[in-house]
Length: 598
Image 1 (cartoon, rainbow, N blue to C red):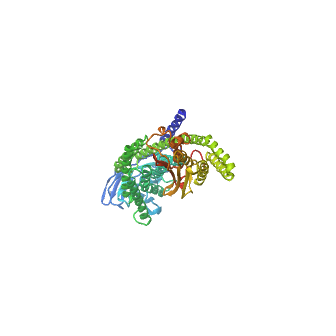
Image 2 (image 1 turned 60 degrees about the vertical axis):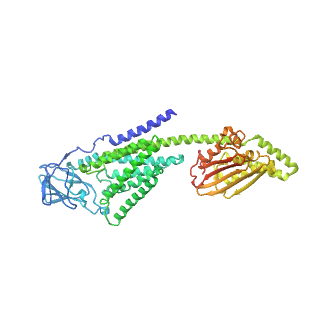
Image 3 (image 1 turned 120 degrees about the vertical axis):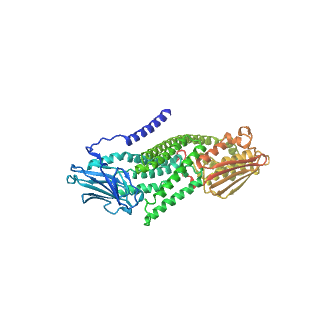
């Protein structure tokens, strides 16, 4: 077992190492000579009546739709196939060489009517050498108006390859987060058989949304994936992040401020859905509504930190502290990126991505560990249930009961042959039910009731008027583990009724409740003190239960197989009542102990 455990841990560690190498390892450049150089010097700017020398990158605080013009002189010598490149952020772009318009973005109407960010590649020729180049920028959004990014100059293909190479590492982090989320969802699906934590699935969905947001913000050129796809992938994913985050928090810790989490979930959902409806109705676009999104996300993230802190204080688990540390790292990374927003113009940088990746890998570790433990626990439970079945089988083969029944039948053959025939039928039904019960996980209550009736018919032959039976059966269309009610009735007869000289009555009731079904077995026999340990009750009705099937054996099977419960009420001299609660059979979706039947 130690070798197996060490092997699994080693495999997980190697997977994490390989994943990190996939993101950060250096690729060989097989496609270009890397003719790229900065082109930030010598520029002048102008807007309205103001002009001066520009130091790129730069940010001029201009009203929206105000045009910023950057002017420079191209080199005296330009190679064939040369180009200039820069990234525009939610800006209209026009580039002139001399008086000739050589580039414009966007060239056509974009899907959704929103302006997107884009990499702009301006092809140049030898004839453009020494001419004036003018870059005109304007934005319908005040936050992005007057922004000028770094400008690169070099071979066209080199520029494309170099920019992709520069940003692909960031993009691979998003891909890795998405891959981890799919693995966690797969674990949640596999774990349904073993009753692993249901919040794994919500966590996987949350990480997929986060991966979509980070992937859309990876700043890759749009050669394969369209501009609108990157744009809406980032914005819509960001907009719905609070929704999936609060859904995960509620699934993970419904008992910690569950009502507040529910309220925050619906508020986040209403906000995201409202922004979507406004956009589709032709109102404000998603960029104009992004402050609302950032506020919602910030509040939700702060709330998530608070919930994790409360969980770390209230819950005793080896996993909670590591998750709290990871969520704090994400929070601090977000603060750092926000502070750097004014300098970089991009709130989602490497810090946030690496923090989210750390969080995802930690949760993957938790998911694998929990699944492994549940599989091992399930194997142990199967062995326990097998032992329980073996004990069940052995306990029902009681020589004294068989001898007494056969003697009763022999006596009846002479005095009442018809009753002897009926007793033989009841005895065969009783034995058949015992044998079949070992092979089945759940049976209809009507089958268990038939077993009970056969047993009581046999006992009435022996005890006659000393044993009275009252049946109050209001419901029997539900399922129970076999041999859960019959042993309780047997205990009531042997240790409740027959322990009294004048006998008594055994009452069996069933009824339906909101969340399931209830079966009660009550006798007006001797009773016992429930505060006295079982070991000290040598002559009580639980003594035989302990030596044969045992109430704890029954309780174990009721809880583990049907998700129900068993309780006992008794007082000396007043009798005993055992109440068994079975969950609604519609909720029984998990086969237990390797049984494929529902």
